Image 1 (spheres, rainbow, N blue to C red):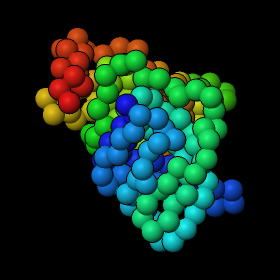
Image 2: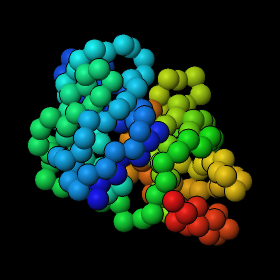
Image 3: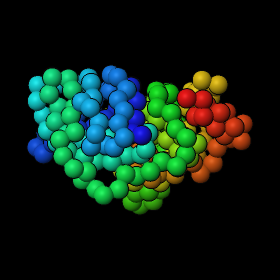
Image 4: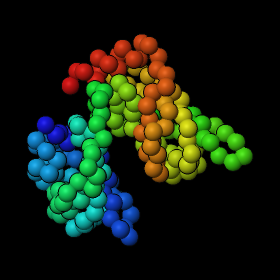
Length: 195
């Protein structure tokens, strides 16, 4: 079963247009990605009546990229998967919005440097997280982040973790835990399992 949860953020990319962030307004389900019904969404920023492109689709099964059309506040899957594989998430996960601050270790010339970052964790699992953040004095994250030490405001209190970068695009960083406080690890496991 494929589930696109309400409140999650999807990114629609169209040639020659800026990326468009879309917030899912209601949960949708289907047995397969291609069988998903139109997804009710709210576009952030500009008003768009119709747009086509590739959407980064985060579901309960993982992440994939697929052709889609945005029209009248609904995102409709319009084509085949652009890749043959959905990137599977093996760990239990929870979407949400959790305030985060920390320090990123950037690998740049002439060497490594530390950069303060702040933002929010939009997706958390027992294996890693998705951070949407900016660096102090910049509208996005610096390129080349190797790892980040984060303090995340979670429902049970502050969670401290060191996160190794898996993927980074503009203000988004997906990472896997290198280290997490053992107390936070237990609380996170319970939190992700309590869906």
